[in-house]
Amino acid sequence: MKSLVPEFEAMRARFPEGFASSLVLPCLRRIQEERGFVADADIDELVTCLGVPRIQVEEALSFYTQFRRQPIGRWHVQVCHNVSCSMRGAETLLAHVQRKLGIAPGETTPDGRCTLTTVECLGSCGTAPALMVNDRYVENLTIRAVDDLLEELK
Amino acid sequence: MAGRQLLMTFPVTATSHALAEYRARGGYEALDKALRHMTPQQVTQEVTAAGLQGRGGASFPMGRKWAVVVPGDGQPHYLVANADEGEPGTFKDRWILENAPHLLIEGMVLAAYALDARHCFIYIRGEFDLPYRRVAAAIEEAYAGGYLGERICGTGFACDIIVYRGAGAYVAGEASGLLASLEGKKSYPRNRPPRLTVKGLYQRPTVVNNVESLSNVAGIIAHGAAAFRAVGTEKSPGTRLLSVSGHINRPGVYEVELGYPWRRFLDEDCGGITGGRTLKAVVPGGISSKVLTAADIENLRLSHEDLWSAGSTLGSGGMIVVAEGTCMVRLLQIMLRFYHHESCGQCTPCRHGTGWMHRIVDRIVAGEGRPEDIERLYFIAKYNDGTTICGLGDAAGYAASGMLDKFRDEFEYCIAHKRSRYEGRIECPTS
Image (cartoon, rainbow over the protein chains, first blue to last red):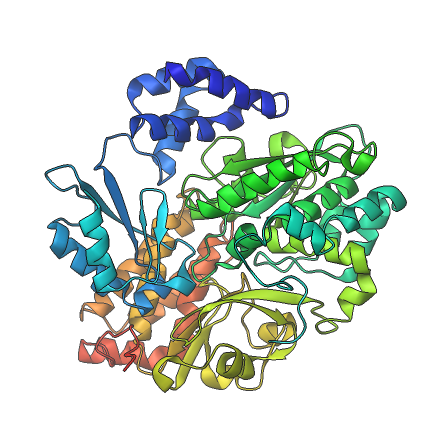
């Protein structure tokens, strides 16, 4: 995390006086982008850097679904299975992805290529069914489009 | 086109979101006019006179929220745009963030002027990647163009906007939960009073407005409150962006003049029900609004008062269309799984109630429903209503009681026959 400290200081300068606590979420996001997850050592360093209580960082990490304490696969496939996506085939699609990857939601392929999770509403209901691959939205999915996508994810 | 339009007034192209094109459409003229010729109080008065109701879900009058904040009272004030769009079925703010970010920014600077707010924030849900990049780029453009920072439009007014990204929590869309999140904490909502406009972000007066609400401000200032009120109905002035999904031929975001006939909107503007099937039901404004049947909406207009009279709400504008042949028990199961997953766990009725209702509907779907389950669901919904800090617990109850009110026979069938009347089908056959 140390290499990110100058970036965090620049971020602090953009916020109003007294907003150091607000930096917890953006800093955790940047740490995760760099390392792939947030490690114990990152928490120690962030607490020192921002001067916030350690419990605040721990709570944020356990509360928000996007933060991870463990490494995951190279590609994080997140399939939406909320109402609108399910009404347009998300459940069939999810079952197909599970078969293709040979894993259940929450699992990673043994080669560390893909981690599969389900998510609740990505705001892609008009382009359903939809999923996310890492930061990218893939929408208007069909079984065939998913097959092509999984081929691409090496 | 569903009546007159105020926001979706230009063709979306690869560059229509950029500053140059926004200015060519008359963008930032309202801001220039207000900073030179209007007092902050006059801006608030104009927004109040326009009768703009909040577009995030609660439909609270925007001007009344603003009027609580006293400019020049010697303490910092903050303005926050709520772009944590997460209500299932809702994707209309995403349209603004991606296609008209300057409309939001101009509205925010006008609001900041009215509220005497030096610092503003856009809290955007963590999953939104393209919307974030579009908004961040637009803010850079606005700084370079003199619409943000010091000496805006060459006047003495100064304002900064910071984009803040969420990290995955539905409850952060609730205004007080959002502010907790913006303070870098878990997004636990908190009790009111004090209102957020009295003690909000870091205990300072804070206005939290929805993206679409703020995006209407520039138009109101440019053309006046009377022009805004000339659109829509008397009780629901203006337009609303509705995001339509589910079993509909042309899903997407539509701008609808309030008062527009509902069936006409679905049949003509949205191209009718998938596969030419019959309409069964509509979830009008996100899954937290109560479901209505095809018969319920037959003669309704799309206005706040029409929806309220039918016992539901336009809510967040997330309209989910359900075709005949769909299993409502399964739809409720998904809704309750969502609330169970998203309950923050702070209040007992919601923490336990959402999971309890979810488990009951799970077992009904599994063919293990018990005769007393329907009354049990009503009981839990009743004791979730009004007993929690935020509306999440209430909403889970409304979803359940709304479904039972309208489709009780399907639940009874499922319990009695140990299987769904519609074989648990929720996809609409397209052929």
